[in-house]
Length: 444
Image (cartoon, rainbow, N blue to C red; front, side):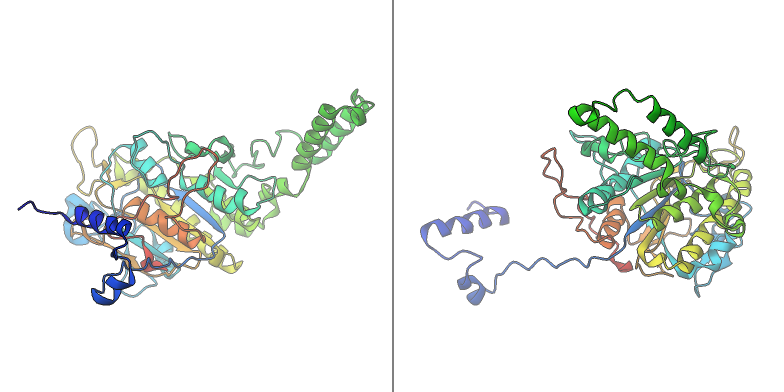
């Protein structure tokens, strides 16, 4: 006898309805066989308003941040083999991040992030989009998705774009994907730790507010279109664009980029360096209502060689700025509305490479690594997932990129499984389907 598979049986059963016979979904089968498809459980959606993403370009080491392994030995731990207690009982971090350890109750760590990709570009694409590279579509990064869902579709009305990157673009791929250039992030350029932060398009070098006003008055005095504006639609549109442009350069929006308005004590608490002042700038932007702000923390995390020498310089800077960002958001009653997400495209190889030319380095590692997330109404003080005793493999609760990104979507108030609205006609879900382990709803 020919075997009938489950799929063939369902097709046959569905076809019986065409002959007036009861099908699996009918009351007959519900009452007699109890065969009723389970109702899809509604997702619990949050009310967070903004995201600050701290993109650790190059890939930070899990062992020297949120998943130390002191028992693994020197070939894994190197010089930093004495983890420290945190503000959460039973939770330990690397000895190199004492300030983050002191406020560990304000965020949660994910110790089992995985995607198996060891290349910067492809791993970044996975972590930013939740999708695997290839195929016919280039998917948008999570920042572009948020600028769509929480920005333009939500009636966002500001001269400041809804998706901002401090200070250089995040990845070597099209972050807006198929959504198009309207959703491409605005990269500020410049350095916010300079005396004047020259945010591209908002602040002009060597031109203060008084000089801008003088320029506008001079332009008005020699305006040859003035007499024909009332009669010419093109001239009207040009004049409107000109007024709007000067409005940006002289209005409240440009003041958002003026860090001199902050107290000196606050600026120093973040650290008077590019990354520290970028974190302060991010706080000012979400305070202004910007839905998505990413900080591209470049330099010092792709530690193929002399790993600990690099971290000795970089870790204190990162520790100071990120820990104070959490405290500053909390003190200003912004933390419940703002998701802070820290992590890179992958981690580092747990076993050190002491051979030439690396002399104590760590390579790329996408098998098991850490991310951190807090604020936005998420549960804090938790460690989700586990790695094995050497941090080489996931031991419990694998977290794939889409599981984390889906959580962010949900906490911002939109369903990651719903169709992504777009004007290109692509019928795709907002986020890739969750892995077998599911979206990280343990934090909701």
